[in-house]
Image 1 (cartoon, protein in one colour):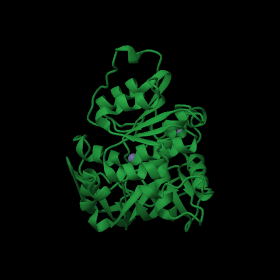
Image 2 (spheres, protein in one colour; image 1 turned 60 degrees about the vertical axis):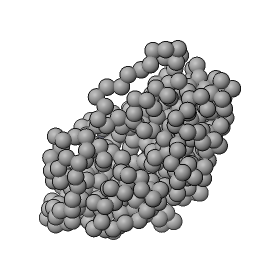
Image 3 (cartoon, helix red, strand yellow; image 1 turned 90 degrees about the vertical axis):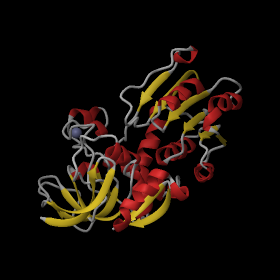
Length: 344
Ligand SMILES: [Zn+2]
Ligand SMILES: [Zn+2]
C-alpha cells in the first residue's frame, strides 16, 4: 500500500487535493511515480457534467513518470523505466483489441477503460504491457505527455477521415484536441488547412502548427466556402463538442466529404443532424482516442525524428499543490492557456 496526494473530485463542479491509498500492483498492473500530468477537457466534463460520479474519484488520465512497482505477469516494463501511459487501458488480446482498435478493449470495459489518478504523486495502470510506452531519452516529459491522449485523438480525427495530401481540411476549434488535429492535418499534407478559432493565443499556435487560414467561428461556413471556391472542404473536424459546431461542419463539407467528430458533447444527451442539402453525400465518422502501446510508440517516433513538434500546446507549468487553481485557469482558458504541465 502506498499513500499519495492526488487530485480528486470533491463534489459536482469541484475538485480538491486528498490523500489516497494505492494498492500494491496486481497481475498485469504497474504503479507509476508521476513526473508530469495535465488536465483534459474531459476532466471538466467528469467534474461538472456527471453528478452521479462519486466524490473521491481520483482525477487525471494523462501522465508520464517512472515505473515504481510492477505486478505479476508484466513482461515489458520494470522498475525505473520512464514511461507514458495511454489514457485508455487495453489488454491487447481481446477481439476488439486485435481486430478493431485497443481503444475499444472489451476486457477493460470500453468506453470506461480510462485510467484515473494521473493527477497525483503516483497512479495505477492495468494491462501495462499494452497500455504503456517507454519514452525515448531525447523526448522531454512535456511532449511525451501529449501522446497519452490529445495528440492521438487529434491525429485520429484526421486518420479516420482518410485525409490525403492536397485535400482541404477545416478544424473547428483550436483547443488541445483541435490543435492536435491541425498538427495531424499538416503532417498528412492537408492544403488548404483552415483553423476555426477566435482566441488570439490559439490562433497564433494554430498558425505555428501549420494552419494556412484562420477564420472566425461566427462566420466560419461562409469563409470556408469562400476559400474553397464555394465547394467546401474535403474534411471538417468537429473538436468542440457542440451542436452548432457539428452543424457548421456538415455545412462546410463538400459533396463526398467527411465530417470527423472528436468532440465529447458532454452534457448534450443527443446530437441532431441538419436535414437541409448539406445532409446528403457526406460521411460522418466519430473517433475516441486511438490507444495502445504501438500507437503511442508511433507518435513518439514522429516527435523523436522531428517530423512533428507538439510542444506549443503546453502553455503553462504549475505544481500539483496548485491544481485547484489550475483547473480554473484551464476551464477559463486564462492567459492563453491550452495545456498545463502539472509537476508533482
Ligand atoms: Zn482526455
Ligand atoms: Zn482488449
